[in-house]
Amino acid sequence: MLRYQTQKLAYMYFVGALVLFLAQVTFGVLAGTIYVLPNLLSEVLPFHIIRMIHTNSLIVWLLMGFFGATYYLIPEEAERDIFSPLIAKLQFWLFLGAGGVAVVGYLFRIHEGREFLEQPIYVKVAIVVAVLMFLFNVSMTVLKGRKTAVNTVLLLGLWLAGIFYFFAFYNPTNLVLDKMYWWWVVHLWVEGVWELIMAAVLAYLLIKVTGVDREIIEKWLYVIVALSLFSGLLGTGHHYFWIGLPSYWLWVGSIFSTFEILPFFAMVVWAFYLLYQGGRRHENKAALLWAVGCPVMAFFGAGVWGFMHTLHPINYYTHGTQVTAAHGHLAFYGAYVMINIAVFTYAMPSLRGLMPFNQLLNMWSFWLMTSAMAFMTFTLTFAGIVQTHMQRVVGGYSYMDVQDQLALFFWMRLGSGVVVVVAAVLLVYSLLGPVREQLTAGRRVDAEPMPAE
Ligand code: HEM
Ligand code: HEM
Ligand SMILES: [Fe+2]
Image (cartoon, rainbow, N blue to C red):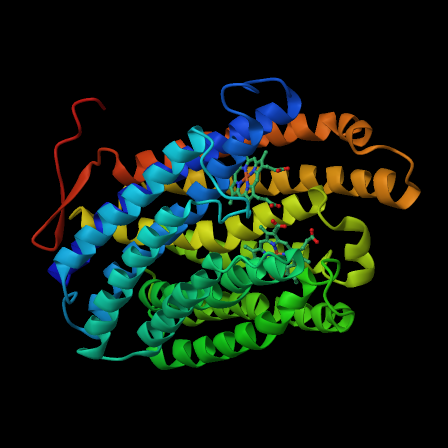
C-alpha cells in the first residue's frame, strides 16, 4: 500500500518509460537487421535515423524512469507529499511531447549532428523547462521535509545531470572544443552524476528489500558517491586521447578511468553484504533479483568492459570499433536499464494496489533479457577484436571488407536482439498485465481467477 497519495504520480512515468523501452529495443532490432541486410529501408528510414531513435528513446525512457522513481521514493524519504502534483503532471506531458516532436522530426530528417544530442534546439529548450520544473518540485519537497542520505544524494545527482545538460547548447565551431564539451554531457552523465542517481535509488531499494539498518546502508552510499566523483571527473580524459587535446590526457585519462571500476565494484560488494546481513526478506523476490543483478551487470558492463579498452595503448587500436558498442550496450543495460526495471518491479504492485504479482514471469524476463544482452555483448566483443586485428593491427583491409568478415557476428547479435525484445514484452506484461492476487485493506486475499485463465 502507498504511504503517500502523491507517490501515485510515479505510475504514468513508469508506463511511459515502459512503452518507450519497447520502442527503443524494437528500433535496435531494426538497426541490427540493417547491419545484415544493408539495403533494407535505405530510402524510407535510413540507418542513421533508426539509430538516432534507438539511442534517443533510450535516454528519454531512462530519464522518465528516474523522474518516476524520484516521485515514488521522495515522499517516503522526506515524509511528506510531493510539493505540486500539478507540476509533476505538466512536466510529464511536456517531456513526453518534446520526445515525440523529436522523433517525428527525425523521421523528416530534422536533427542536429552530435550523437545522443541530435534534438533540434526547441526540443532541447522544452527538455530543459521540463527538467527545471521537476528539479523545483522535488527540491521543494525535500527542503520542507526530512533530509536523508538517499534523497540528498539523489537530488545532487539530478541537479548535476540538469546542469551538465546545458553543455548540449554550447556548440563551438572548433571541432576539438566541440568534442571536448560533448563529453561533458555524455561521459559526465553516465560515469559521474547518473551513478549518484543509481546509487541513491539502489540504496533505497536495498533498505526496503533487505531490511538492513539505514545507517549502515548510508555510510556505503557516501563512499560510493566519493569514489564516483573522484574517478569519473578526470576519467573523462579517456575520451581526450585522439581528438586534438594535450597529450597529458593519455595518462590522466588512463589512470583515473581505471579508478572508475571502484564505485561499480563497491556497489556489488554492498548489495551482497546487505543481502547476507538482512534477516528479513521482502516478499517481492523479483525486485530483489533486479536490485542485486543491477550492480553485478553494471560491474561487468562498465567496469570490466570499460577497463578493457580504457588504457590508451589499447584504445589506440580499439577506438570506435565494435568493442566500444559491446561496452556501451552492457554498461547502459547493467547500470541504468536494470536499476529502472528494479524500481518498476518494486513499485508497480503498490502503485496498482496489488500484492507482488506475476513474479515468476518477471524473473523469467530477468534471466532471458540479461542472458541475451550478455550474449549480444560477447558477439560484439568478438566482432570488435577481429575488426581491430584486421583493420588496425595487421592492417591493409578496408573498413567495408572487414565488415563483410563480421557478418556471422552481426547475425548472432540480431538473434540475441530479438530475444531481448521478447523478454521486454514479457516484462511489460508481468508489470502491467492482469493479476490473480489483490490487496484489500493491507491484507492479501485470493481473488477469483481471471476469466481467461
Ligand atoms: C554505466 C557506466 C557507463 C556507460 C553507460 C558507458 C557507456 C559508454 C558508451 C555509450 C560509449 C560510446 C560513446 C560513443 O563513442 O558514442 C562509451 C565509450 C567508452 N567508455 Fe564507457 N560507459 C560507462 C562506464 C565506463 C567505465 C567505468 C569505463 C572505464 C573503466 C569506460 C570506458 C570507456 C571508454 C574508454 C570509451 C571510449 C571507447 C572508444 O574509444 O571508442 N566506460 N561508454
Ligand atoms: C536495453 C537494451 C539496449 C541498450 C541499453 C542499448 C544501447 C545502445 C547504445 C548506447 C548504442 C550506441 C552505441 C555506441 O555508440 O557505441 C546503441 C546502438 C545500437 N544498438 Fe542498442 N541498445 C539496446 C538494445 C539493442 C537491441 C535489442 C538491438 C538489436 C539488435 C540493438 C542494436 C543496436 C545497433 C545495431 C546499434 C548501432 C550500432 C552502430 O552504430 O554500429 N540494441 N545501443
Ligand atoms: Fe567515458
